Amino acid sequence: MRSDIHVCSDPEAAHDRPVYTLGDRCPECGAPAENGAPAPFDPTDRYGEYRRRARSDRPD
Ligand SMILES: [Zn+2]
Image 1 (spheres, helix red, strand yellow):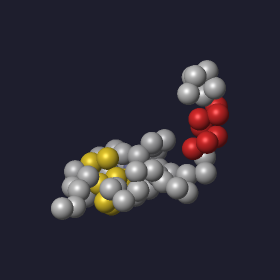
Image 2 (cartoon, rainbow, N blue to C red):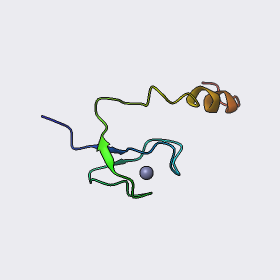
Image 3 (tube, rainbow, N blue to C red):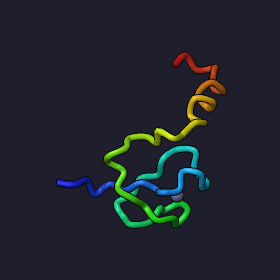
Image 4 (cartoon, rainbow, N blue to C red):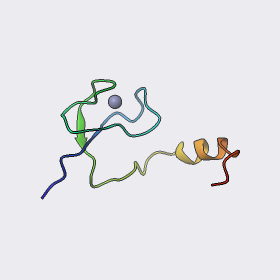
C-alpha cells in the first residue's frame, strides 16, 4: 500500500523544510507535489548542514 502523503517537489521554493500534503499540489506554493515516502529528506539538500550549523544556539 502506497502512502498518500505527498511532498512539495520544489524544495527551493519558499519553504526551508518539506511541505507535506494529501493533495497533488503544495498548499503553500502551488508546485506539483510528489510521493514523499521514499525519501524522508532530500539527500541533495547540501544546505541542510549549513542551516543546522547556523543554529548553534541549540544543543542538538
Ligand atoms: Zn511548495
